[in-house]
Length: 162
Image (cartoon, rainbow, N blue to C red; front, side, top):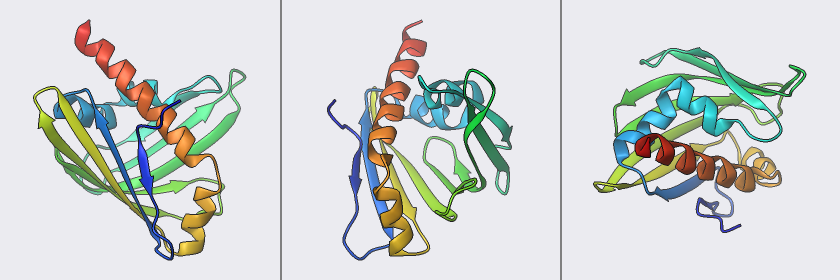
């Protein structure tokens, strides 16, 4: 599988720069990050179903999602707070994987219009330490992120063609 989502991690730094171009208008790319029904679709996968259990799409609003298996067992859960939401331009939020040693991360998502039908997502993720960032990179993070972004592209493309 070609990895279209690029993860750049400079040695000795405590952040990541993640980029991905989508064959989607910027408005739809942004919507995929803030519309609960769409978000749940592209975050779900063959191992489990993702549900947003809380979503307050506003400054200082909380969000939380969890992924469960077919028996309802929680496989993964994450939460955070929105610090800024500028439609079709940017989201600033915290991201914390529950029951994890990774600690909270600060994420800056920028949505860039390339053409009327293409856009780019730029994610700058800041960790408390280099060690925490490197711990994430030892996991199948890049692979999972590419799979999720591929699903985002496929699902949102189908919505626009329906």
